[in-house]
Length: 244
Image 1: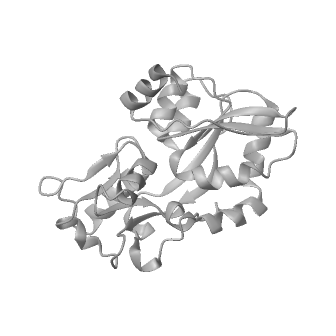
Image 2: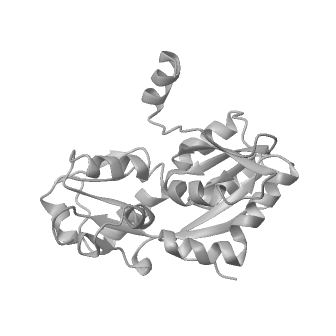
Image 3: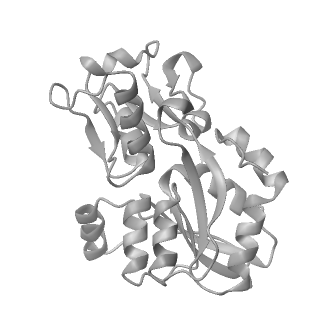
C-alpha cells in the first residue's frame, strides 16, 4: 500500500480492505460491504458460482454511501441500513431495486467478565458512530431505552464503523463495547461475556442491498444472498433471516 493510500484511510477513518474471490477467468464484481457483514460475506463469497467473483471493500455504511455518491466504482452496495441505499436510488446513482438481505443484532461485549449494561456508567466503552453506522445508532437507542445513555458523564469512544469498535475492545483500548453479534459469533466469544440488546428497544438493523450498475452479475449476487438456503446459513453468523 502506498503512503498516499494509507494516509487517505487514516484521514477518513474508513476500513478499506479489497478482497478478491473468483476463478482466473471469473467476473469480478466490485462490492461495497458494511463492516459488520465482513465475516459472513467473506465466507459466502467463496461459495459463489465459478463464473462469479467479487472484489469487496469494507467500511461504515455512511462512508461507503458517500464514496458511491462521489463516483466510486462499485457494482453492488450491501448496507447495514435501508436509508442509504434508498438515498442512492433517489439521487439517481443506483438503478436497482433496494432489497433486504439480513437483519443484524447489536450486543455489548465485556471481555473476561459477565456482561451487564450498567457497566457503561463507570467503564470506558465504545460503539460505532451513531451518525455513520446503523449499529452505533442501535446501540445508542438501546442505552436510551434503558436510561443508561449519559454521554455528558461517560462519553463512549466512537469508532467509524462496528469493526473499529470491535478492535477497540479486542485490543484492550477500552473495557467493553457495543458490537455486532455476528462478530462475537465468528470469534466464538463466550455467551456470558455478551449482552444482546432486545430488538424491541432499538431501531431495527435491517440490512439492504442495491445494485449500482446494470450488470447482470450484480443481480445474481443479490439473488444468491436472499436465497432461502443462504438465509438459513446467515443464522449461523449471528443474523436473523429476512422475512419471506
